[in-house]
Length: 533
Ligand SMILES: Nc1nc2c(ncn2[C@@H]2O[C@@H]3COP(=O)(O)O[C@H]4[C@@H](O)[C@H](n5cnc6c(=O)[nH]c(N)nc65)O[C@@H]4COP(=O)(O)O[C@H]3[C@H]2O)c(=O)[nH]1
Image 1 (spheres, helix red, strand yellow):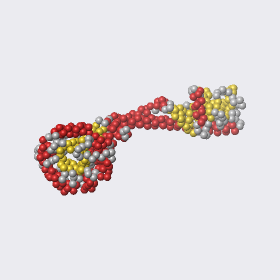
Image 2 (cartoon, helix red, strand yellow):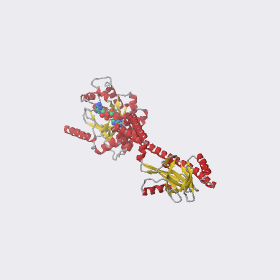
Image 3 (cartoon, protein in one colour):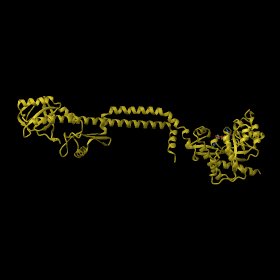
Image 4 (cartoon, rainbow, N blue to C red):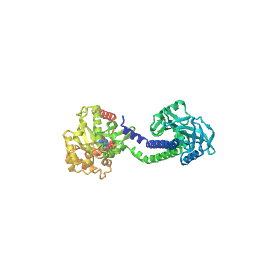
Protein backbone atom coordinates (compact mmCIF):
# COMPACT_ATOMS: atom_id res chain seq x y z
CA UNK A 1 0.00 0.00 0.00
CA UNK A 2 1.28 3.46 -0.89
CA UNK A 3 2.21 5.88 1.84
CA UNK A 4 -0.61 8.50 1.92
CA UNK A 5 1.83 11.40 1.49
CA UNK A 6 3.51 9.66 -1.44
CA UNK A 7 0.12 8.87 -2.95
CA UNK A 8 -0.86 12.54 -2.73
CA UNK A 9 2.43 13.80 -4.17
CA UNK A 10 2.11 11.32 -7.04
CA UNK A 11 -1.43 12.49 -7.79
CA UNK A 12 -0.16 16.09 -7.82
CA UNK A 13 2.66 15.11 -10.18
CA UNK A 14 0.26 13.35 -12.56
CA UNK A 15 -2.17 16.19 -12.93
CA UNK A 16 -1.01 19.44 -11.34
CA UNK A 17 -3.72 21.39 -13.21
CA UNK A 18 -6.50 19.19 -11.92
CA UNK A 19 -5.04 19.42 -8.45
CA UNK A 20 -4.79 23.22 -8.63
CA UNK A 21 -8.36 23.33 -9.89
CA UNK A 22 -9.40 21.00 -7.05
CA UNK A 23 -7.58 23.17 -4.52
CA UNK A 24 -9.34 26.23 -5.99
CA UNK A 25 -12.69 24.45 -5.70
CA UNK A 26 -11.95 23.47 -2.14
CA UNK A 27 -11.00 27.04 -1.25
CA UNK A 28 -14.17 28.30 -2.99
CA UNK A 29 -16.26 25.73 -1.11
CA UNK A 30 -14.67 26.65 2.24
CA UNK A 31 -15.15 30.35 1.60
CA UNK A 32 -18.73 29.75 0.48
CA UNK A 33 -19.32 27.76 3.65
CA UNK A 34 -17.78 30.55 5.71
CA UNK A 35 -19.97 33.10 3.84
CA UNK A 36 -23.12 31.06 4.41
CA UNK A 37 -22.21 30.57 8.08
CA UNK A 38 -21.70 34.30 8.57
CA UNK A 39 -25.01 35.06 6.85
CA UNK A 40 -26.74 32.54 9.15
CA UNK A 41 -24.98 34.01 12.16
CA UNK A 42 -25.89 37.55 11.08
CA UNK A 43 -29.52 36.56 10.56
CA UNK A 44 -29.64 34.93 13.98
CA UNK A 45 -28.06 38.01 15.56
CA UNK A 46 -30.67 40.21 13.83
CA UNK A 47 -33.57 38.02 15.01
CA UNK A 48 -32.13 38.01 18.51
CA UNK A 49 -31.81 41.80 18.43
CA UNK A 50 -35.46 42.12 17.32
CA UNK A 51 -36.53 39.88 20.22
CA UNK A 52 -34.44 41.84 22.69
CA UNK A 53 -35.83 45.17 21.49
CA UNK A 54 -39.41 43.88 21.63
CA UNK A 55 -38.89 42.50 25.14
CA UNK A 56 -37.38 45.80 26.29
CA UNK A 57 -40.27 47.74 24.75
CA UNK A 58 -42.87 45.49 26.36
CA UNK A 59 -41.03 45.69 29.68
CA UNK A 60 -41.28 49.48 29.48
CA UNK A 61 -44.94 49.39 28.35
CA UNK A 62 -45.95 47.01 31.13
CA UNK A 63 -43.97 48.89 33.77
CA UNK A 64 -45.49 52.20 32.76
CA UNK A 65 -49.06 50.90 32.56
CA UNK A 66 -48.71 48.89 35.80
CA UNK A 67 -47.54 52.07 37.59
CA UNK A 68 -50.31 54.16 36.13
CA UNK A 69 -53.12 51.62 36.61
CA UNK A 70 -51.98 51.00 40.16
CA UNK A 71 -51.89 54.74 40.83
CA UNK A 72 -55.39 55.19 39.43
CA UNK A 73 -56.70 52.25 41.42
CA UNK A 74 -55.30 53.60 44.64
CA UNK A 75 -56.56 57.12 43.87
CA UNK A 76 -60.03 55.74 44.69
CA UNK A 77 -62.37 58.59 43.85
CA UNK A 78 -62.10 58.63 40.02
CA UNK A 79 -65.40 58.69 38.19
CA UNK A 80 -66.54 59.79 34.76
CA UNK A 81 -66.83 63.38 35.80
CA UNK A 82 -65.05 66.19 34.04
CA UNK A 83 -62.35 66.56 36.71
CA UNK A 84 -61.50 62.84 36.68
CA UNK A 85 -61.24 62.81 32.88
CA UNK A 86 -58.95 65.85 33.00
CA UNK A 87 -56.86 63.98 35.60
CA UNK A 88 -56.68 60.94 33.31
CA UNK A 89 -55.65 63.08 30.36
CA UNK A 90 -52.95 64.73 32.46
CA UNK A 91 -51.50 61.27 33.10
CA UNK A 92 -51.81 60.36 29.42
CA UNK A 93 -49.84 63.44 28.42
CA UNK A 94 -46.93 62.18 30.51
CA UNK A 95 -47.16 58.65 29.16
CA UNK A 96 -44.79 57.34 26.47
CA UNK A 97 -46.84 54.35 25.39
CA UNK A 98 -50.48 54.74 26.43
CA UNK A 99 -52.96 56.57 24.25
CA UNK A 100 -56.24 56.24 26.14
CA UNK A 101 -57.55 55.30 29.58
CA UNK A 102 -61.01 53.97 30.25
CA UNK A 103 -62.96 53.41 33.46
CA UNK A 104 -64.84 50.13 33.93
CA UNK A 105 -67.83 49.44 36.11
CA UNK A 106 -68.17 46.52 38.48
CA UNK A 107 -69.13 44.22 35.52
CA UNK A 108 -66.00 45.24 33.59
CA UNK A 109 -68.12 47.36 31.23
CA UNK A 110 -66.54 50.51 29.86
CA UNK A 111 -68.41 53.54 31.14
CA UNK A 112 -66.16 56.35 29.98
CA UNK A 113 -62.76 56.98 28.46
CA UNK A 114 -60.25 59.80 28.32
CA UNK A 115 -60.84 60.12 24.55
CA UNK A 116 -64.63 60.04 24.26
CA UNK A 117 -65.75 60.97 27.76
CA UNK A 118 -68.83 59.31 29.27
CA UNK A 119 -70.47 56.71 27.01
CA UNK A 120 -74.25 56.84 26.51
CA UNK A 121 -74.38 53.10 27.42
CA UNK A 122 -71.69 51.09 29.18
CA UNK A 123 -70.07 48.60 26.75
CA UNK A 124 -68.61 45.23 27.42
CA UNK A 125 -66.32 44.06 24.67
CA UNK A 126 -66.20 40.36 24.04
CA UNK A 127 -62.57 39.90 23.09
CA UNK A 128 -60.32 37.05 24.03
CA UNK A 129 -58.21 38.13 26.95
CA UNK A 130 -55.07 36.67 28.47
CA UNK A 131 -53.93 37.25 32.00
CA UNK A 132 -50.26 37.48 32.82
CA UNK A 133 -48.69 36.00 35.94
CA UNK A 134 -48.45 39.53 37.34
CA UNK A 135 -52.22 39.90 37.07
CA UNK A 136 -52.54 42.28 34.07
CA UNK A 137 -55.27 41.28 31.66
CA UNK A 138 -54.30 41.79 28.01
CA UNK A 139 -56.75 42.10 25.13
CA UNK A 140 -55.14 42.06 21.71
CA UNK A 141 -56.46 43.44 18.41
CA UNK A 142 -59.46 45.25 19.87
CA UNK A 143 -60.96 47.37 17.06
CA UNK A 144 -61.02 51.02 18.16
CA UNK A 145 -61.52 54.45 16.67
CA UNK A 146 -58.47 56.55 17.56
CA UNK A 147 -58.01 60.08 16.24
CA UNK A 148 -60.49 59.43 13.42
CA UNK A 149 -58.68 56.21 12.48
CA UNK A 150 -59.82 52.66 12.86
CA UNK A 151 -57.10 50.70 14.58
CA UNK A 152 -56.66 47.33 16.27
CA UNK A 153 -55.19 48.12 19.63
CA UNK A 154 -53.95 46.25 22.67
CA UNK A 155 -55.67 47.00 25.93
CA UNK A 156 -54.17 46.37 29.33
CA UNK A 157 -56.74 45.96 32.08
CA UNK A 158 -56.21 46.15 35.84
CA UNK A 159 -58.13 47.37 38.88
CA UNK A 160 -61.18 48.68 36.99
CA UNK A 161 -59.20 50.58 34.34
CA UNK A 162 -58.42 50.07 30.64
CA UNK A 163 -55.11 51.33 29.26
CA UNK A 164 -54.90 51.41 25.46
CA UNK A 165 -51.33 50.99 24.20
CA UNK A 166 -50.17 52.94 21.18
CA UNK A 167 -50.90 50.49 18.31
CA UNK A 168 -47.65 51.04 16.42
CA UNK A 169 -45.71 50.07 19.56
CA UNK A 170 -47.57 46.78 19.95
CA UNK A 171 -47.42 46.13 16.18
CA UNK A 172 -43.64 46.40 16.38
CA UNK A 173 -43.60 43.91 19.24
CA UNK A 174 -45.95 41.42 17.56
CA UNK A 175 -44.09 41.58 14.26
CA UNK A 176 -40.73 40.95 15.92
CA UNK A 177 -41.44 37.22 16.28
CA UNK A 178 -43.51 34.45 14.72
CA UNK A 179 -45.20 33.76 18.02
CA UNK A 180 -45.58 36.05 21.04
CA UNK A 181 -46.55 34.04 24.09
CA UNK A 182 -47.82 35.30 27.40
CA UNK A 183 -46.88 33.27 30.45
CA UNK A 184 -50.17 32.60 32.28
CA UNK A 185 -50.85 30.85 35.57
CA UNK A 186 -51.05 27.42 33.96
CA UNK A 187 -49.58 27.61 30.48
CA UNK A 188 -48.35 29.83 27.69
CA UNK A 189 -50.96 31.61 25.66
CA UNK A 190 -50.54 33.10 22.23
CA UNK A 191 -51.19 36.81 22.33
CA UNK A 192 -52.10 36.88 18.68
CA UNK A 193 -53.16 33.69 16.86
CA UNK A 194 -50.76 32.37 14.19
CA UNK A 195 -51.46 30.04 11.31
CA UNK A 196 -49.92 26.73 12.25
CA UNK A 197 -51.20 23.18 12.58
CA UNK A 198 -52.37 22.16 16.05
CA UNK A 199 -49.53 19.69 16.66
CA UNK A 200 -46.92 22.16 15.33
CA UNK A 201 -48.33 24.74 17.69
CA UNK A 202 -48.28 22.29 20.55
CA UNK A 203 -44.57 21.54 19.97
CA UNK A 204 -43.79 25.23 19.62
CA UNK A 205 -45.52 25.90 22.91
CA UNK A 206 -43.61 23.09 24.63
CA UNK A 207 -40.26 24.44 23.46
CA UNK A 208 -41.21 28.02 24.34
CA UNK A 209 -42.34 26.93 27.81
CA UNK A 210 -39.03 25.15 28.47
CA UNK A 211 -36.86 28.04 27.31
CA UNK A 212 -35.14 30.31 29.75
CA UNK A 213 -33.12 33.25 28.54
CA UNK A 214 -32.23 32.94 24.84
CA UNK A 215 -32.24 29.48 23.28
CA UNK A 216 -31.48 28.50 19.70
CA UNK A 217 -32.53 25.17 18.19
CA UNK A 218 -31.18 24.01 14.84
CA UNK A 219 -33.94 23.06 12.47
CA UNK A 220 -32.54 21.55 9.30
CA UNK A 221 -30.62 24.36 7.63
CA UNK A 222 -32.62 26.92 9.59
CA UNK A 223 -33.07 27.65 13.27
CA UNK A 224 -35.61 28.53 15.93
CA UNK A 225 -34.85 31.30 18.38
CA UNK A 226 -36.73 31.63 21.65
CA UNK A 227 -36.26 34.60 23.96
CA UNK A 228 -37.77 34.81 27.37
CA UNK A 229 -36.77 37.32 30.01
CA UNK A 230 -37.09 36.37 33.68
CA UNK A 231 -38.78 39.64 34.72
CA UNK A 232 -41.44 39.67 32.04
CA UNK A 233 -44.15 37.18 31.17
CA UNK A 234 -43.52 37.35 27.43
CA UNK A 235 -41.80 34.65 25.39
CA UNK A 236 -40.89 35.38 21.77
CA UNK A 237 -40.39 32.57 19.31
CA UNK A 238 -39.16 32.85 15.71
CA UNK A 239 -38.51 30.11 13.21
CA UNK A 240 -36.23 30.86 10.27
CA UNK A 241 -36.10 28.41 7.38
CA UNK A 242 -33.06 28.30 5.08
CA UNK A 243 -35.14 29.63 2.17
CA UNK A 244 -36.25 32.66 4.16
CA UNK A 245 -32.72 33.37 5.38
CA UNK A 246 -31.40 33.21 1.80
CA UNK A 247 -34.23 35.33 0.47
CA UNK A 248 -33.77 38.03 3.10
CA UNK A 249 -29.99 38.14 2.59
CA UNK A 250 -29.78 37.34 -1.11
CA UNK A 251 -27.73 40.36 -2.13
CA UNK A 252 -25.17 39.94 0.62
CA UNK A 253 -25.00 36.20 0.02
CA UNK A 254 -24.53 36.68 -3.74
CA UNK A 255 -21.76 39.24 -3.11
CA UNK A 256 -20.00 36.94 -0.66
CA UNK A 257 -20.28 33.92 -2.98
CA UNK A 258 -18.92 35.90 -5.91
CA UNK A 259 -16.11 37.16 -3.68
CA UNK A 260 -15.38 33.56 -2.68
CA UNK A 261 -15.10 32.50 -6.31
CA UNK A 262 -12.81 35.43 -7.14
CA UNK A 263 -10.58 34.79 -4.10
CA UNK A 264 -10.48 31.06 -4.89
CA UNK A 265 -9.50 31.78 -8.51
CA UNK A 266 -6.75 34.15 -7.37
CA UNK A 267 -5.56 31.64 -4.77
CA UNK A 268 -5.51 28.86 -7.38
CA UNK A 269 -3.49 31.12 -9.70
CA UNK A 270 -1.01 31.82 -6.91
CA UNK A 271 -0.89 28.17 -5.93
CA UNK A 272 -0.31 26.86 -9.47
CA UNK A 273 3.50 27.26 -9.57
CA UNK A 274 3.83 25.79 -6.06
CA UNK A 275 1.68 22.82 -7.02
CA UNK A 276 3.77 22.27 -10.15
CA UNK A 277 6.93 22.39 -8.02
CA UNK A 278 5.36 20.03 -5.50
CA UNK A 279 4.83 17.58 -8.34
CA UNK A 280 8.58 17.36 -8.97
CA UNK A 281 10.18 13.98 -8.28
CA UNK A 282 12.45 15.63 -5.69
CA UNK A 283 9.54 15.63 -3.26
CA UNK A 284 8.88 11.93 -3.76
CA UNK A 285 12.39 10.61 -3.96
CA UNK A 286 12.53 9.58 -0.30
CA UNK A 287 9.63 7.21 -0.93
CA UNK A 288 11.39 5.80 -3.98
CA UNK A 289 14.56 4.66 -2.18
CA UNK A 290 12.97 1.31 -1.44
CA UNK A 291 13.45 -2.10 -2.94
CA UNK A 292 9.99 -2.17 -4.50
CA UNK A 293 10.90 0.83 -6.66
CA UNK A 294 14.34 -0.43 -7.66
CA UNK A 295 15.04 -1.86 -11.09
CA UNK A 296 18.50 -3.35 -11.23
CA UNK A 297 20.41 -3.70 -14.47
CA UNK A 298 23.50 -5.81 -14.85
CA UNK A 299 26.14 -4.79 -17.39
CA UNK A 300 28.60 -7.58 -18.17
CA UNK A 301 32.35 -6.92 -17.75
CA UNK A 302 34.56 -8.79 -20.21
CA UNK A 303 38.07 -10.12 -20.37
CA UNK A 304 39.13 -8.16 -23.44
CA UNK A 305 41.60 -10.82 -24.61
CA UNK A 306 39.24 -13.82 -24.44
CA UNK A 307 35.90 -12.00 -24.81
CA UNK A 308 34.61 -13.95 -21.78
CA UNK A 309 32.32 -12.23 -19.27
CA UNK A 310 34.07 -12.25 -15.90
CA UNK A 311 31.48 -10.35 -13.94
CA UNK A 312 29.08 -7.43 -14.06
CA UNK A 313 28.38 -3.95 -12.78
CA UNK A 314 25.06 -3.40 -10.97
CA UNK A 315 23.29 -0.22 -12.11
CA UNK A 316 20.08 0.98 -10.60
CA UNK A 317 17.06 2.81 -11.95
CA UNK A 318 14.05 3.90 -9.94
CA UNK A 319 10.68 2.83 -11.26
CA UNK A 320 7.65 4.90 -10.47
CA UNK A 321 4.50 3.59 -12.16
CA UNK A 322 5.37 3.88 -15.87
CA UNK A 323 8.32 6.19 -15.38
CA UNK A 324 11.91 5.04 -15.07
CA UNK A 325 14.22 7.53 -13.36
CA UNK A 326 17.87 7.37 -14.39
CA UNK A 327 20.55 7.79 -11.71
CA UNK A 328 21.74 11.11 -13.11
CA UNK A 329 18.21 12.55 -12.81
CA UNK A 330 18.08 11.81 -9.10
CA UNK A 331 21.64 11.83 -7.79
CA UNK A 332 21.74 15.57 -6.91
CA UNK A 333 18.44 15.25 -5.01
CA UNK A 334 19.53 12.06 -3.27
CA UNK A 335 22.73 13.77 -2.16
CA UNK A 336 20.92 16.93 -1.01
CA UNK A 337 18.31 14.93 0.90
CA UNK A 338 20.86 12.62 2.55
CA UNK A 339 19.17 9.58 1.01
CA UNK A 340 22.23 8.00 -0.56
CA UNK A 341 22.69 5.43 2.20
CA UNK A 342 19.18 3.93 2.19
CA UNK A 343 19.33 3.79 -1.59
CA UNK A 344 22.75 2.11 -1.77
CA UNK A 345 21.80 -0.38 0.92
CA UNK A 346 18.52 -1.25 -0.80
CA UNK A 347 20.42 -1.80 -4.09
CA UNK A 348 22.88 -4.05 -2.25
CA UNK A 349 20.17 -6.18 -0.68
CA UNK A 350 18.18 -6.52 -3.86
CA UNK A 351 21.21 -7.28 -6.07
CA UNK A 352 22.50 -9.89 -3.64
CA UNK A 353 19.08 -11.53 -3.43
CA UNK A 354 18.62 -11.64 -7.20
CA UNK A 355 22.13 -12.90 -7.92
CA UNK A 356 22.30 -15.37 -5.02
CA UNK A 357 19.08 -17.01 -6.03
CA UNK A 358 19.30 -16.87 -9.84
CA UNK A 359 22.95 -16.84 -10.93
CA UNK A 360 24.12 -20.40 -11.67
CA UNK A 361 27.15 -21.51 -9.67
CA UNK A 362 30.23 -20.13 -11.41
CA UNK A 363 33.41 -22.17 -11.98
CA UNK A 364 35.51 -19.08 -11.22
CA UNK A 365 34.81 -16.13 -8.86
CA UNK A 366 32.20 -13.91 -10.53
CA UNK A 367 33.04 -10.22 -10.17
CA UNK A 368 29.99 -8.17 -9.06
CA UNK A 369 30.69 -4.43 -8.94
CA UNK A 370 28.34 -2.17 -6.95
CA UNK A 371 28.46 1.64 -6.90
CA UNK A 372 28.50 3.46 -3.58
CA UNK A 373 28.26 7.04 -2.47
CA UNK A 374 31.04 7.93 0.01
CA UNK A 375 28.57 8.14 2.94
CA UNK A 376 27.56 4.53 2.37
CA UNK A 377 31.09 3.18 2.79
CA UNK A 378 30.64 2.20 6.39
CA UNK A 379 31.97 -1.28 7.06
CA UNK A 380 29.78 -2.07 10.06
CA UNK A 381 26.53 -1.10 8.38
CA UNK A 382 27.19 -2.01 4.77
CA UNK A 383 28.66 -5.44 5.49
CA UNK A 384 25.38 -6.43 7.23
CA UNK A 385 23.52 -5.72 3.98
CA UNK A 386 25.56 -8.47 2.30
CA UNK A 387 25.54 -10.78 5.30
CA UNK A 388 21.76 -10.56 5.67
CA UNK A 389 21.43 -12.66 2.50
CA UNK A 390 20.36 -16.17 3.36
CA UNK A 391 23.22 -17.72 1.51
CA UNK A 392 26.47 -15.91 1.02
CA UNK A 393 27.77 -17.21 -2.27
CA UNK A 394 31.44 -18.08 -2.28
CA UNK A 395 31.62 -17.80 -6.09
CA UNK A 396 30.48 -14.16 -6.02
CA UNK A 397 33.31 -11.69 -5.60
CA UNK A 398 31.94 -8.32 -4.48
CA UNK A 399 33.71 -5.22 -5.76
CA UNK A 400 32.93 -1.91 -4.07
CA UNK A 401 33.17 0.98 -6.52
CA UNK A 402 34.11 4.41 -5.18
CA UNK A 403 34.38 7.34 -7.56
CA UNK A 404 37.73 9.02 -7.87
CA UNK A 405 36.14 12.31 -6.75
CA UNK A 406 35.03 10.88 -3.41
CA UNK A 407 38.46 9.64 -2.34
CA UNK A 408 39.35 10.94 1.10
CA UNK A 409 41.46 9.93 4.07
CA UNK A 410 38.28 9.11 6.07
CA UNK A 411 37.37 6.47 3.53
CA UNK A 412 40.73 4.75 3.91
CA UNK A 413 39.86 3.16 7.29
CA UNK A 414 36.56 1.74 6.02
CA UNK A 415 38.18 0.57 2.78
CA UNK A 416 40.83 -1.28 4.80
CA UNK A 417 38.13 -3.09 6.79
CA UNK A 418 36.39 -4.18 3.58
CA UNK A 419 39.60 -5.38 2.02
CA UNK A 420 40.46 -7.40 5.12
CA UNK A 421 37.16 -9.20 4.72
CA UNK A 422 37.90 -10.10 1.10
CA UNK A 423 35.93 -7.40 -0.70
CA UNK A 424 37.52 -5.85 -3.79
CA UNK A 425 37.84 -2.06 -3.99
CA UNK A 426 37.59 -0.25 -7.32
CA UNK A 427 38.22 3.40 -8.07
CA UNK A 428 35.49 4.40 -10.53
CA UNK A 429 35.60 7.12 -13.21
CA UNK A 430 39.39 7.10 -12.93
CA UNK A 431 41.08 9.79 -15.01
CA UNK A 432 38.50 12.48 -14.32
CA UNK A 433 39.91 13.55 -10.93
CA UNK A 434 43.29 14.58 -9.71
CA UNK A 435 44.45 11.41 -7.98
CA UNK A 436 48.12 10.80 -8.18
CA UNK A 437 50.15 7.70 -7.69
CA UNK A 438 50.55 8.53 -3.98
CA UNK A 439 46.85 8.80 -3.18
CA UNK A 440 46.12 5.64 -5.16
CA UNK A 441 48.98 3.81 -3.43
CA UNK A 442 47.59 4.85 -0.04
CA UNK A 443 44.21 3.31 -0.85
CA UNK A 444 45.72 0.35 -2.67
CA UNK A 445 42.61 -0.47 -4.76
CA UNK A 446 42.11 -3.80 -6.48
CA UNK A 447 40.61 -2.26 -9.61
CA UNK A 448 40.99 1.01 -11.52
CA UNK A 449 38.07 1.79 -13.83
CA UNK A 450 39.03 4.06 -16.71
CA UNK A 451 36.31 6.68 -17.15
CA UNK A 452 34.28 6.37 -20.32
CA UNK A 453 35.07 9.93 -21.42
CA UNK A 454 38.69 8.82 -21.97
CA UNK A 455 37.61 5.76 -23.94
CA UNK A 456 35.22 7.82 -26.14
CA UNK A 457 38.21 9.81 -27.45
CA UNK A 458 40.51 6.83 -27.82
CA UNK A 459 40.85 6.88 -31.62
CA UNK A 460 41.35 10.64 -31.78
CA UNK A 461 44.36 10.35 -29.46
CA UNK A 462 43.31 13.45 -27.49
CA UNK A 463 45.11 14.68 -24.39
CA UNK A 464 42.48 12.91 -22.30
CA UNK A 465 42.77 9.58 -24.04
CA UNK A 466 46.56 9.84 -23.85
CA UNK A 467 46.10 9.45 -20.08
CA UNK A 468 45.17 5.79 -20.54
CA UNK A 469 48.78 4.46 -20.73
CA UNK A 470 49.56 6.49 -17.61
CA UNK A 471 46.57 4.92 -15.80
CA UNK A 472 47.77 1.51 -16.93
CA UNK A 473 51.17 2.17 -15.40
CA UNK A 474 49.60 3.44 -12.13
CA UNK A 475 47.48 0.27 -12.00
CA UNK A 476 50.57 -1.89 -12.55
CA UNK A 477 52.42 0.04 -9.84
CA UNK A 478 49.70 -0.70 -7.26
CA UNK A 479 48.97 -4.16 -8.66
CA UNK A 480 45.37 -3.31 -9.63
CA UNK A 481 43.23 -4.73 -12.42
CA UNK A 482 42.14 -2.24 -15.10
CA UNK A 483 38.58 -2.04 -16.44
CA UNK A 484 37.75 0.33 -19.28
CA UNK A 485 34.20 1.74 -19.29
CA UNK A 486 32.19 3.01 -22.25
CA UNK A 487 33.48 0.80 -25.05
CA UNK A 488 31.07 1.81 -27.78
CA UNK A 489 33.01 0.48 -30.77
CA UNK A 490 34.42 -3.00 -31.19
CA UNK A 491 37.67 -1.52 -32.66
CA UNK A 492 38.33 0.00 -29.25
CA UNK A 493 38.63 -3.48 -27.69
CA UNK A 494 41.89 -4.21 -29.53
CA UNK A 495 43.23 -0.67 -29.01
CA UNK A 496 42.64 -0.96 -25.25
CA UNK A 497 44.08 -4.44 -25.08
CA UNK A 498 47.19 -3.18 -26.92
CA UNK A 499 47.52 -0.44 -24.26
CA UNK A 500 47.51 -3.13 -21.57
CA UNK A 501 43.87 -2.81 -20.41
CA UNK A 502 42.68 -6.28 -19.40
CA UNK A 503 38.94 -5.81 -18.85
CA UNK A 504 36.18 -3.68 -20.29
CA UNK A 505 32.46 -2.95 -20.49
CA UNK A 506 30.43 -0.91 -22.92
CA UNK A 507 27.47 -0.86 -25.25
CA UNK A 508 29.53 -2.46 -28.05
CA UNK A 509 29.98 -5.54 -25.86
CA UNK A 510 26.72 -5.62 -23.91
CA UNK A 511 24.20 -3.12 -22.61
CA UNK A 512 23.01 -3.10 -19.02
CA UNK A 513 20.19 -5.70 -18.75
CA UNK A 514 17.59 -6.86 -16.26
CA UNK A 515 18.49 -10.04 -14.36
CA UNK A 516 16.72 -12.53 -16.66
CA UNK A 517 18.11 -11.27 -20.01
CA UNK A 518 21.47 -10.86 -18.28
CA UNK A 519 21.46 -14.52 -17.18
CA UNK A 520 20.34 -15.60 -20.67
CA UNK A 521 23.22 -13.56 -22.11
CA UNK A 522 25.69 -15.27 -19.75
CA UNK A 523 24.30 -18.72 -20.70
CA UNK A 524 24.68 -17.89 -24.40
CA UNK A 525 28.27 -16.67 -23.91
CA UNK A 526 29.15 -19.77 -21.88
CA UNK A 527 27.73 -22.16 -24.49
CA UNK A 528 29.57 -20.24 -27.27
CA UNK A 529 32.84 -20.58 -25.31
CA UNK A 530 32.19 -24.32 -24.75
CA UNK A 531 31.46 -24.80 -28.49
CA UNK A 532 34.82 -23.17 -29.32
CA UNK A 533 36.81 -25.47 -27.01
N1 LIG B 1 27.59 6.34 -23.08
C1 LIG B 1 27.85 5.11 -22.66
N2 LIG B 1 27.51 4.81 -21.37
C2 LIG B 1 27.78 3.54 -20.97
C3 LIG B 1 28.36 2.58 -21.77
N3 LIG B 1 28.48 1.42 -21.05
C4 LIG B 1 27.98 1.71 -19.83
N4 LIG B 1 27.51 3.00 -19.76
C5 LIG B 1 26.92 3.73 -18.66
O1 LIG B 1 27.96 4.24 -17.89
C6 LIG B 1 27.61 4.22 -16.52
C7 LIG B 1 28.61 3.41 -15.79
O2 LIG B 1 28.44 3.52 -14.46
P1 LIG B 1 29.27 4.50 -13.50
O3 LIG B 1 30.40 5.11 -14.22
O4 LIG B 1 29.55 3.77 -12.26
O5 LIG B 1 28.22 5.70 -13.24
C8 LIG B 1 27.01 5.44 -12.59
C9 LIG B 1 27.13 5.47 -11.09
O6 LIG B 1 28.08 6.44 -10.69
C10 LIG B 1 25.79 5.92 -10.70
N5 LIG B 1 24.98 4.77 -10.27
C11 LIG B 1 24.29 3.89 -10.99
N6 LIG B 1 23.74 2.97 -10.18
C12 LIG B 1 24.10 3.28 -8.93
C13 LIG B 1 23.85 2.70 -7.65
O7 LIG B 1 23.17 1.68 -7.48
N7 LIG B 1 24.41 3.33 -6.56
C14 LIG B 1 25.18 4.44 -6.71
N8 LIG B 1 25.73 4.97 -5.62
N9 LIG B 1 25.45 5.00 -7.88
C15 LIG B 1 24.89 4.43 -8.98
O8 LIG B 1 25.13 6.51 -11.78
C16 LIG B 1 26.05 6.58 -12.85
C17 LIG B 1 25.34 6.47 -14.15
O9 LIG B 1 24.76 5.24 -14.26
P2 LIG B 1 24.09 4.80 -15.60
O10 LIG B 1 23.23 5.89 -16.11
O11 LIG B 1 23.46 3.49 -15.36
O12 LIG B 1 25.30 4.69 -16.55
C18 LIG B 1 26.21 3.62 -16.48
C19 LIG B 1 26.15 2.82 -17.74
O13 LIG B 1 24.84 2.58 -18.22
C20 LIG B 1 28.70 2.95 -23.11
O14 LIG B 1 29.23 2.20 -23.88
N10 LIG B 1 28.43 4.23 -23.49
